[in-house]
Image (cartoon, rainbow, N blue to C red):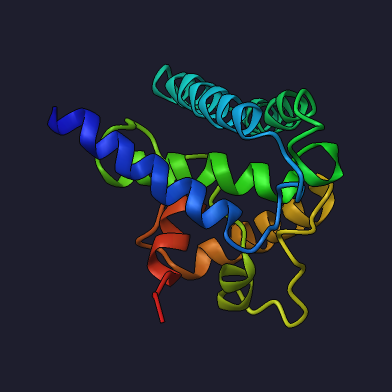
Amino acid sequence: MKKEFIFGEVWLLTVSAAFQRANIYKSDYDKKEKKVFKEKLKELIIQKSEEYNNGVISEEDHLKNIEDIITFSADYPNVLRGGRLNFGICQKLLNLYLKYLWCLGLLKFPPPHFPVDRKIQIDLGITNPCSWTAMDDKKEYLKVIEIARKALPEHSEINSIAELELKLFKRN
């Protein structure tokens, strides 16, 4: 029961953070279809997250997982504004869920990336942060990841960009 409760809370926090400012739902969505979308999305994210315990996931595979979430979401055009979730929302969903699991000790390895949002971009010194809720391809996202990689040597005690994001993260 405890494990089920924690996983439920982690999922709730993940979805709340990824959807909070994104205005993803159409105004006239079907409630039953929205419920199915949310249940299937949760199943997909959980299934994808399990891959991360089988060894270190390459950046290519991680990006493919994000793309798979976008592809999945396109099956719900009657629910989602724009007919699907964009790259920024999908990366936030997957990366944040993985971050929570990792911080709880439920992932053996740090996630390959971190949730890219406005705050981490500012923390990394990016002067004109891109809007993660409007990010519709991986180009802007990968720019942020590369800036984090370049900042890593300044923090000799840190071994991954996921750890760097944790160090920089401060809730205001």
